[in-house]
Length: 295
Image (cartoon, rainbow, N blue to C red; front, side, top):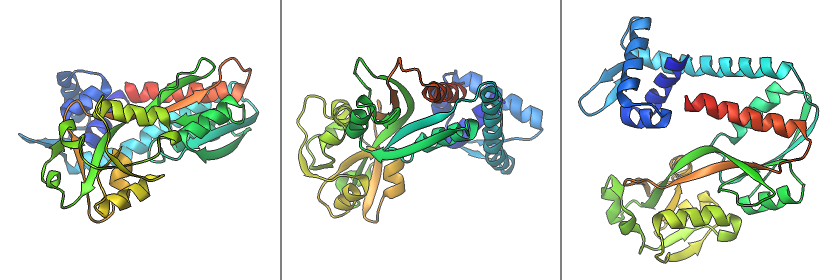
């Protein structure tokens, strides 16, 4: 199962170095594990080119079927453990509007399947609103887009996402594969209001602009409107890689940054100390899920 997990990460990124880094193992170790898996299955799974790797036909089948296998195994383990003690009651969860392409919904769905006796009450808001709801005891757990620094709130990073730059297709930087921070700092920027998520906003600014001023020419509340303004030539934007790729309209090009690439996080936050079994089970599920992904 562990070698299957290794293969699925490699099949997703198609790069031994990046896959090894994500799995927290050495690149030679990952290569050896993939070779052992190929020997066990009796067929090559990847084409090892000089500049890139691709999946063989057998590798494509294993990628598709292996994801289903791991999902079923994970669900089986969670259900067995959950059967020992089934909490009841209500779990109030607040999603963040800026993280639909990360694993929020997957975590909540897994919880629902493992603990069917718990009723879920779901809402969606911006990070700052979610933290206010959490501190006011209006929700039990909240997904937010920044590290939480509040003595009455605990948090756990559940996903990390690379930040990318979106620009008009006729922009001079569109001809490059990657862009540097120096390329970006003086460009007109279409951004979202800081009050929607101050921590997230400041993390982006710190990583890319540092102490240099941002040249914000327009603020829009969500990624769809931001990318529309980019397509209209108003300016560039910095967004999560998944959202930029998924929502990218005609007339916009997305480029990665040079190393070290900037990142953003998805965090689940909760108030510690409250005797609330559903919250405890949800955080345990998140930790277990992260442990399997990190192996």
